[in-house]
Image 1 (cartoon, rainbow, N blue to C red):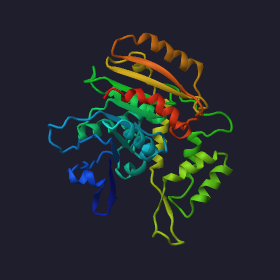
Image 2 (cartoon, helix red, strand yellow; image 1 turned 180 degrees about the horizontal axis):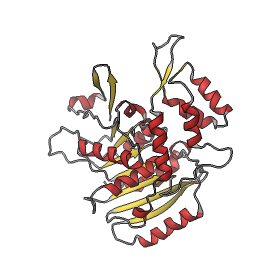
Image 3 (cartoon, helix red, strand yellow; image 1 turned 180 degrees about the vertical axis):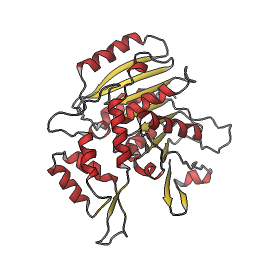
Image 4 (cartoon, rainbow, N blue to C red; image 1 turned 60 degrees about the vertical axis):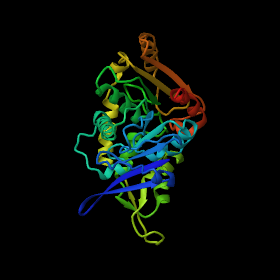
Length: 336
C-alpha cells in the first residue's frame, strides 16, 4: 500500500493534491491526511489497516520514519521502503520531504533553516498524523535531524525508539578529501545555474567537468522536473528545491553538535550509528572513540548506543549496498 500527499502552491493559494494507490485501500476508505507541514508518502505493509480517520478501535501499527539527506527527497527511500513493507507487513513507513526539499519546497517556511527546525517539522507532522514512531532512520543530514527529534521530545519517551544515523557523526562534518564530492561546493555550483534548464544532460556534463562524480551528477538531476508541455522540444526543466534554504541547512548541519544527547542517552532510546566502508564522510578516530565510549556508558536496560559498519558501500548506503543495509536494519522491525 502506498499513500502519497503533496502540496503545491498556485495563484489562488495552496492546492492539496492527493493520490491513493491500490484499489483495496479505496474499498476500505483509507484516506491520507493533507498536510501543510511537509510533503510525505506512507508506505504500508499488507497487514496494516490504519488510516488517520479510521475507527479508533484499530490500533496504530508500528511506524518507522525515513529521512533523506541534503539535496535529496523522500523518493530516495521509495524502493527500500517498499522492500521493508513487503518483508515486515505489519509496519508502515513514513517518508518525508524535509523543508526546502522536493515537494516540501512549495510549502514556504520561515527561516532560519536549521537541523533543529527541520526536526521540529517532522515532529509536527507526526503530531498531525497522530503517529508515534518506533524507528527513525536518517541518512547523512537526516541522521542529525533524527538525533534532534529525540532531543526535542519530552523525556522519558512514551515508548522505546530505535534511531539509525546512516553515515553521519553527531558532531563535526568532515566531507570528502581532494577530488571527492563536497556538498558545500555542490550547493555553490548549483546556485550559479538558472531556475530552469533546457537539458538534464547539460547539467550532468557540467557537474562532471567541474570534478563531481557521475553518480552524484545523475543523482542531482533527479531534482529537475519538466516545467513545459511534455514531449515538446522546447520543454524546460525546473529545480524542485529551495537552494538558498538548503545552503542554510547544510551550514547548520556543519555547525550543529548532537554529542550531548548521544553521551547522555534518554531512557528508552537506542542510537545506532552506521559507517559506510567507503564513505565520503570522513569518520575521524575521535568520532569512533567517542561513540565507543558512549556505547559503554549507555548501560541502562532500555537505552543504548551501537556502532555498525556497512561493507562494500560508499556514502549512498541505500543505493550502494541495499542488501547489506536491509540485513543490518532488519532486526529493528522484528518481533511485531
